[in-house]
Amino acid sequence: MKRQGLKVIGVRVYFIPIRTRMPLKFGAETLTSVTCARVSLTLRDEKGNQAEGWGETPLSVQWVWPSTLPYEERHRVLKEFCRSLASCWLGFQERGNPIRMGHTFQEEVLTPLQERNTPLPWLAALVCNSPFDIALHDAFGRLVDRPTYETYTSEFMADDLASFLQPSRDSAATFSKSYPADWLVKQPVTKLRAWHLVGGLDPLEPQELTGAEPKDGFPVLLTDWIERDGLKCLKIKLRGNDSEWDYQRVVKVGKIALAKEVEWLSTDFNCTVLDPGYVIEILDRLAAEHRDIWDKILYVEQPFPYELEKHQIDVHAVAARKPLFLDESAHDWKMIRLGRQLGWSGVALKTCKTQTGAILSGCWAKAHGMSLMVQDLTNPMLAQVPHVLLASHVGTIMGIETNAMQFYPTASEPEQKVHPGLYQRRGGAIDLSSIHGLGFGYRIEEIRRELPQPEVALEMS
Image (tube, rainbow, N blue to C red; front, side, top):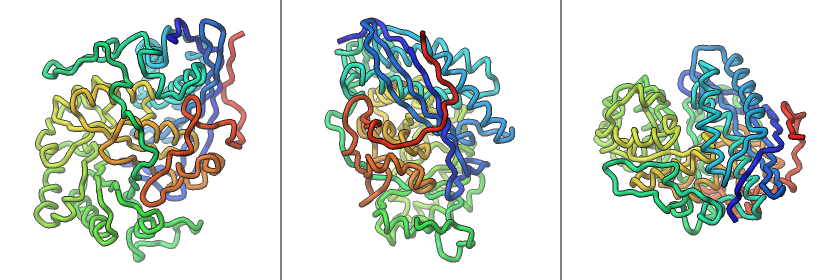
């Protein structure tokens, strides 16, 4: 069943604009709209068989490219980079399978292309490439008549993980004769506990309402969200540069969590912290003054800057208090290896850094005893499907972050008609049981979405 040669013979790129119902703060910036890049990719094997796959990712400018440059300038560069990638993918060929193909593309095509497009950050390049890479994995599953996650075995992969990964010297881990399926969950769950994002701008109590909030029938206050969706997990967005505000925010949300029987909290310091003492002081103060809230904190999401190589901060003291998860810095397994050396205890995976990268990173992390989470990029529409499948298959410390239903709840209406449990949270969970079929199981033929004209449409003659 191993394919000797695969070639991309068709690529289409669509840009789908979406506006948020509530603002979402990333670091020093606020998101009020996003463009989703949707990609169709047609793959052909050496026998002439071909299949079309789909991928989608929000081009979240503020998250992938924090900068003082004007938003629209960065937005334009990201879209233009997607157009350039379409030309690069057309005609790209490689032996084997999507892991080999996606890995080679990143090493030999994406890296030099990003370097020629300074100051575009590597994280932004990964996000722009991810819908193409996701579509590749979907197309291959359709080509071989299997769900995507059944293709990560020796039956379809000529190369074992040792071809892509190296274990740390202090570890007994080995990747020889090992394949991604060996590190994935044997029986993936069809229900995942859902994490709700408590944004830094979200009103928590009635007296905080300004009257400008949307009146669209969806909740605004945190207590209303908890009651409507049966939420059990809350992720608290913090500032990272105002310790008293951050502490009081955790206490305030924590008290609501206690009153509403929420089970778990996590904290996200927005990658703005430079001194581990900042986080330690808040955690220790919580432990001393509000032990019941401290007990509910399951993990701390990346407090420190994106550039892990530049900011090699020893974080062992933080991780000794609560599990500490890499997110923005976890570009690939090499960055995760560096993070482990610095004291990080877990990794937050994201499909927006490519499906190939997420699978390889997850395998490396699990082989080295690191815990996993799957974090959201506020994924709507098709982007939600690979996102939730990743969490279901890699095995996480607790469920999945999923918040598109908070910030653009009507954006996914066509997809929701086919997958009702993916775009709403009930009993504190999302339901994956509607996902089935080849590739990522989008059931895209059943989804009645009207797409705009493609920005790029390329085919090989």
